[in-house]
Length: 186
Image (cartoon, rainbow, N blue to C red; front, side):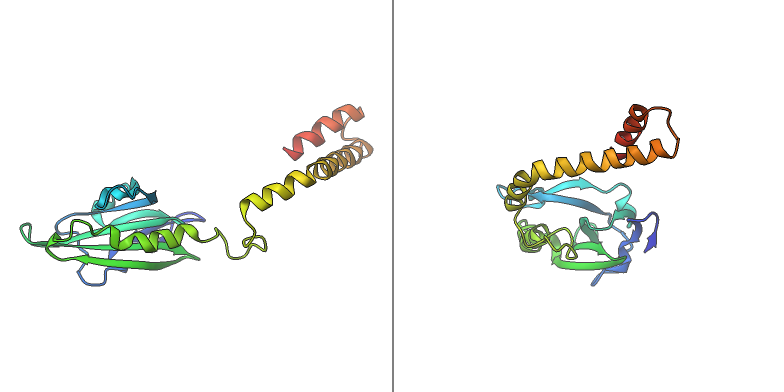
């Protein structure tokens, strides 16, 4: 795996193939998962977009997102699909689940991965947040209670910054300094 940007990596599927050699002999694909459609039991139940260039087995992924890699091996007539559900966490591949569909006999193979997909999306986005255990509704209710105090504090900070800019003679009028201070906060 090679880092491309702060949160993106180029990954080669051979880094996590568990059973097959991962050379994409009979093709393959990868999908960035966004959710589930439980009205279907096949691969269409796993929602998301296919990853560009994933047929080659080397493709770009973003840290913190959930991906499904399908490696198709065997002969063209009797092929086997290996599905690997993974994410990138702190620069490392984390395999969440795998499923081997020998001879592609199980048409409902996607259902085998639903539990791991649900678990991934149920996690808070970051374990480091001290507010992770508080529900979104409770957080929004608290923010609504504090809205007046928050707005007052924002105005105070803008006015203080405007006064600093005006005193430093960066602007001719206090009005200009206030406009600049307001623009800084946006």
